[in-house]
Length: 471
Ligand SMILES: [Zn+2]
Image (tube, rainbow, N blue to C red; front, side, top):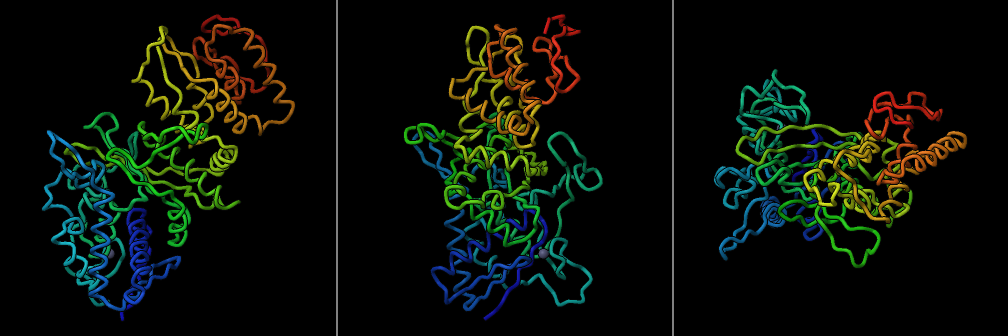
């Protein structure tokens, strides 16, 4: 019998791989308890192997099935069916022989043997250590971008030249040499069905996003608890997050999320919270990860990846939990139902993804002003949504802002709201007034979008300095 202790690396990517490895071992244990036993500790995964040869065989089989079902899709061209890798996978552009050994049926068994024998680790006392786990190292494996998306072979993008740009941190260290275990955990992450993905953003040669939970409490048991709360998902080629409106629950069809990372995360969180709330009470916020790692992966040949963290603050999680409690799913019941037309009523599809992303990001980053801006009328563009969506928007505004105001402030807002409704019959969108009135500053003129008020709660009929429109 051998006992292996797999320590937490405090690296979001590798630790997600470790959690997923624990799940695979647990799955094997449930069928073959005489072969292997697993124990989750806050700082490590303890694997007790009674029959190494059999365990490697079972792990090989489990991985083959897992990879088949999560990473491949069937494409049909000229009547011929082919099994292809989904575009978000880091190594999908490489020839199959260059895929990490875990993803090659002929190499996997031998590779797993190496991992479990730990042939790259040497006795203590050696100077060189694995840069990820710190264990002394001899030989080792080169960690490539296809296994661990934070390294790049492009010198210009690496090391000292790392910089923050719009979407996140660009340019990580160059290829590292690591131990077999870290390499194994890193490459395992792609097959984890708890990873959220969305491909083809901006077209089929655009980019894909991958989201991983990164709870602030870096504790393996907690990561496992959070990921165990996820609803089961069988992903298609494009994404593994689907949604359904709460009204007409029986009839409505499930649809794919399609806009971008924030819509993906919002749709996923509201579903997960809804699932947890229906099973246990008072657990919702604890079982949701407040931290997320968002990776953008170009789908073309150049694989420079950008990454950034998103931390959901407590008010955001409370707002989501309250909305879900009231059976309002902000993405499924509201955002996904809003579209844009020109003045003649023709749909303007190009503006929709950015608009939905803006609103989803506003909700997830607790930026009410940004949310309200989505409703500001724009020249030759109108927001369209059904009557039921209007009441959902009101509910969101109510919980987000109005429920936090004292009675006096609320009175001012309501007066202002009534005033606006009277003054602006031409505003096609009644929600606009409600939302702006609830916004802490009542800040802009609806015609020119310039600041009209500076004094938070004082409602004074005045004239906008820019458009000269009487407010
Ligand atoms: Zn290592």
